[in-house]
Image (cartoon, rainbow, N blue to C red):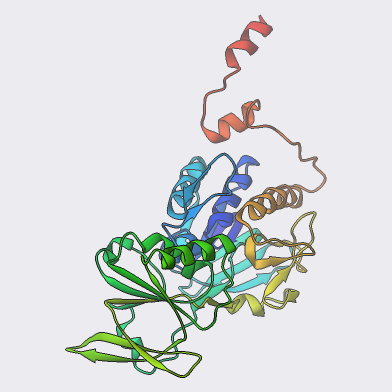
Length: 352
């Protein structure tokens, strides 16, 4: 059975979830298709406990907490999430609607499509060490799901970006020992994080080694130690319980690359009025889109979702003016949100 809906949203990360909210405020129904087994995108998949400091009105918010709050916010609009599915086919129809199908043969007929796929289908850049893949998930980790598993353990963290430095700083008081390994003295992480890491080294609370993980030795089916080859070609052995590697992601658009959209490298080109792609009726918000001056911030994606929702409302109701209404004062908005009208009594008194 083909599912009929106003909008299909591709991706259930922060921007995809907030897109549901903005569409719902304007009276539109949405279904979300998410390739991962749970909503949240990169926030829950890569750094669920990482603090986020630039969400308005929330001085600090964990990535997982942000997703939970967004799910609470969109609950009044009862969106349907199709998890563990990848959208394979998007075909425009002559009547302006779209036929869509996932890799699990879930079919949709939608009047508009919003792509909120973050960086697309992503895979971590892995360690180029033969045989080490056998230990992924037990001793080798490309993401952190439960920081408590490292409590009291000897860990090595490889990488020089924000993720590597963030976990160094987060785990230094959790683990028995922390050693950071990076190929050079130059980092891509925030300068404040690098400065804090160096201060911890000066306090003998952790170590930093310049080099690359080049080999490992195992004993009784477990990694006992790794070999780090420095820029001086000297090989140093490090005993460890866990190895965490953060070398970034391989962003891939996947099937989206075959949908006939204009691309700028791996990002979808949009305008800045509607955040519409080169295909009318298909919009893109969040990290997956590109326009002059684009900034990959959750905050920017929320703004894009709001403007895209107004553009979609106008597309679905041609010739009708789309009025801007405020959630504080609009009875229509209160009804859609399922909240009490704070001015109901005042209006009754005025009418009397």
